[in-house]
Length: 286
Image (cartoon, rainbow, N blue to C red):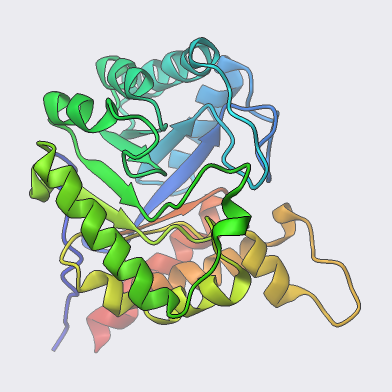
């Protein structure tokens, strides 16, 4: 008899019968893995459409790098980068998410056609974010976050990373709900690589069921991150560059899908699209 994992879904988003694939479009000159490649609006829209053709179910558009050590871009520049790309993709029928920590960018992106706000700070970076998302009545990703990119590495201190991330996420979810966002619209994200060292990230991947126990759809964003470079590095060697971590990313995508993640966020879609479909086929044969 075939079985299906209940991954949940956020109110206002499509439902998929497997782990969804969120493709990344970085409209930035300085993202850690592909900065500058899609900085032009036309190129960014084309790249988003290419990701959909390769198997992405939704596309996450961001105009500000959140790599460790990154400095913030100003509001007008972020708007200039993001809004035309969101509008162009939405006009082509793509399910678009906006990756931003600013309420103004979130609101303008929703007006341009975005249907999901993915805020890596979970609404902590901008006090206007939660009211803006509540007013827009769109789903909201609450990620585990302890601080901005320029100092987050110093905040990677845990006695029990899984327990602390779960507790801090629960606290943040409650605050967001108190701020007016419907609980049915929430997605959670453990924030791999954000104020976390490689052992912390690996522990979280190993304990995804504890995160799912928070009762909301789970987004796992491991793509090309430092902890994968750490895993792949042989003794005495330097870590492989970000673009050489896609096979490792697909491995985490398969693990996440098998564990019941709602979606995985990746830069290179094709291998992960295959991975989540294989995971679903195995699940259905159980």
